[in-house]
Image 1 (cartoon, rainbow, N blue to C red):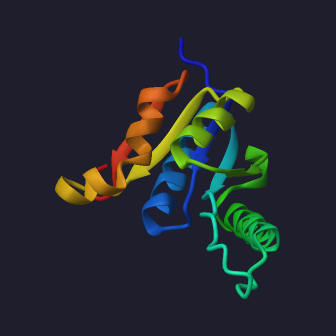
Image 2: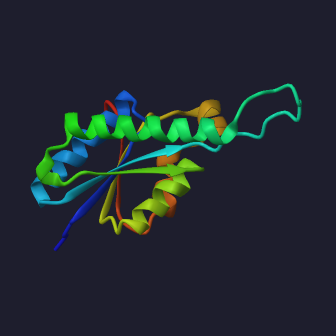
Length: 149
């Protein structure tokens, strides 16, 4: 029998990710599972070696992380009932690999992720976070294209 105690739901705060969260919340309610919301802050590219360039990478990364934490908290308070014991995690780096790492660390029983369904050149250039998660995850992944589920 399938037992689900923790559902991991990645988000980039887009509408399609919100659709994924709605599925995760419904499933968590049916299984009595907890929800773990994850947002991954991308790697900040190296800056030009221009000594006149005054951009503080560590400060910028800290601000991105703080912003993600605030957005996750707001998302949880608006869309996840307290009885599901929502947990928020901010990761850093490659989104697909980081989602899989967090799922393992959190011992998630299921990952629920929506995809935009990019095709052709856009898919080749941008890749698919959902596709990478499906390939790398050690737990089951529920992936669906928004508008078709």
